[in-house]
Image 1 (cartoon, rainbow, N blue to C red):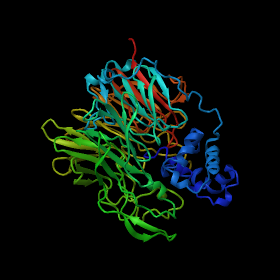
Image 2: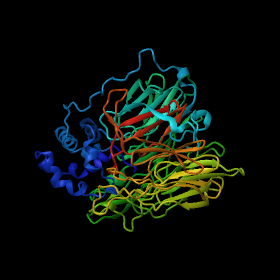
Image 3: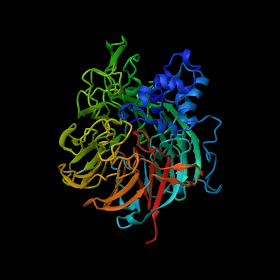
Image 4: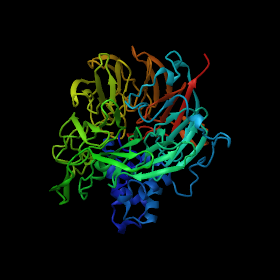
Amino acid sequence: MKLNAATVGLLLSCFLACPPALAQQNGDALYTQHCAQCHDAGDPQSRTPSRSALRAMSFEHVLVAITSGSMAAMARERTDDERKAIAAFVTGKSGTDQTAAGTGPGGACAPDARVSAGALDGPRWNGWGADLSNSRFQPAAMAGLSADQVPRLKLTWAFGFPGVPAANAQPTVIGRVLFVGGADGKVRALDARRGCTLWTYTSEAPVRTSLTFGALAGSDQAAVFFGDVRTNAYALNAVTGALIWKVKVEDHPAARITGAPALWSGRLYVPVSSIEEATGSRPTYPCCTFRGSVVALEAATGAVSWKSYTIADAPHPTTTNAAGTQLYGPSGASVWSAPTIDVLRQALYVATGNSYSNPPADTSDAVIAFDLATGRMLWHRQATPNDSFVVACFMPDRTNCPQNNGPDVDFGQSPILANLPDGHRILVIGQKSGVVHAFDPDQEGKVLWQTRVGKGGSLGGMEWGSTADAEHVYVANSDVRFVSGAPLRLNPNAGGGLFGLNLSDGKIAMQVAPVACGERDRCSPALSAAITSIPGVVFSGGVSGFLRAYASKDGRLLWEFDTARDYDTVNGVPAHGGAIDGPGPVIVDGMLYVNSGYGQWAGVPGNVLLAFEVGQP
């Protein structure tokens, strides 16, 4: 669930390690000899993308990933020609193929339709969770969409991301402008009503974070902030797309930014994650040396105010593996999701991933509170101890899998800060274990309640994001499973389910049963993507490709749309919808926006951003 463009490198890891003497052989022979055993018959839970997912990528996308992207270190011993041969073989394309028709300036807005300061006024969905609390709840005034209008939602435009197999950067909408990143290494400002392109910025690496909007202190500029998979944080002028500053926040070669930065009081808080649990799986790799962190930057300049690690102790040599490679620990505890800001206590909350190596950290699989001003760790509350895990634990060669490894049930979503009717406050969050937790932010994370809604597992439980209104938290269950004996085939009858729980006591108040796939190909009932709510309605996209809206009171189906099909796009790029995973729906000013396409777990790849509005009765 956590890996995207960089997983290209994981699929190629065996290939890239091939001896130079084999370089003259063609790609087919090299793949068959050195990679097929890992990737053609591997377990999808090992983070290995399917061959079909790779084939959906463009030659250029793969080449960038192994040349200058997050997997460049894996390919550093390969020549330029070898890298091109790799990209050509796995994609079935070459740099001269005309496979990306429509990738030029098609879909540009009229010259007089520039972004103006006035265009940035009005209803908005800012960043990942819509508010500092990461509630993913859009109030009526901002939503402009009521429960009785939802059944009349109609597709109004589609935008295609060229040459990529996934649309996994959630849009941000500010007034009449939509800002969105892409796996193609572009950040765009679109007209939110028409989908035409206002400006485009080329980033150093793919962008999968949401963009965060805000004013720059001491100037009249408005900016959008984001991070890329090479741990660069950026500030762009929201009106022109011009670069204001760019700062690299972490030097570890496996590090990346997946969670949206949070902005408060002139300071930007950037979460840092990594793919070392994948790259660290090779027996010759000294696993592992990455620690998750949060970096506080001055929003106006990008200057670092503080950097705090999720694991206090730096990794140190521990033991050697069976291949004689020196191992290190503690490591891991990535921050995959957007930080949550507590203005009252002047605190920042993040949720962490699993440990990568022994000894396991007591801050992995945890919620951690940091002081906003200094970055000092205030408290932490661990949900699952001893969860040390790397991808090798799912692969034939388990050399780097920690002994007595954990279940890989880390947190992939942001904590939601909510107020109870009695005046108390809670932090509520779903975990891959299948358990929803409520912690007391005013009593150092004291456990208030815990409710199990899923079986859990590496791809189980709650993945990317939950949502909460005044009385309930709504969670979507993944529990993706694969057909026994056919590991690259999704089980069409396992996983899924949507739940509404009382914020006060965690009791289940609403439940939607999993929706079976029927005869649909490459389908799962799993609900892995983040979900969103407005008054009276919960929206949830599925691995099946269906986007559905349910009444939050009783779970009644109000509307559904099958996104897994071809689209004519406003920018002329061939586009297809597929599995919905990662980002969730964004609702602003009577419009609903959703990404479709995610081939990571044997689901259907895709590359489209869809926009809906209310049609005539």
